[in-house]
Length: 77
Image 1: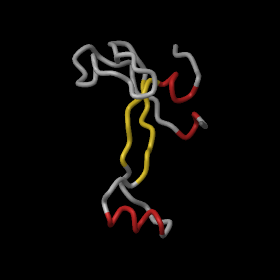
Image 2: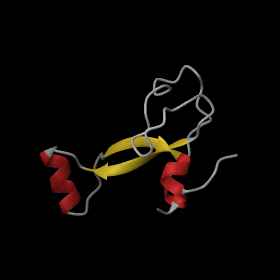
Image 3: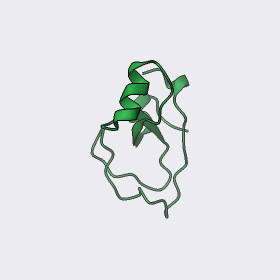
Image 4: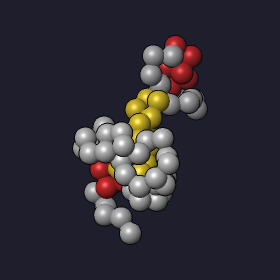
């Protein structure tokens, strides 16, 4: 995946809502200090978003948070 197309978020603070929850890419919990990104999955099951996606128009996509390293292969610092 081209990491220049992704936004890099972090470092994650200890009180962030996703701390302690598993990364869907690697299964390891998010921890304070992690850098993450959002990976777009697509339009989901919303009919209007699906129609917009099929026609090449902008739409709000379903996305998941993953560790930066899981999405890019790059170590962080």
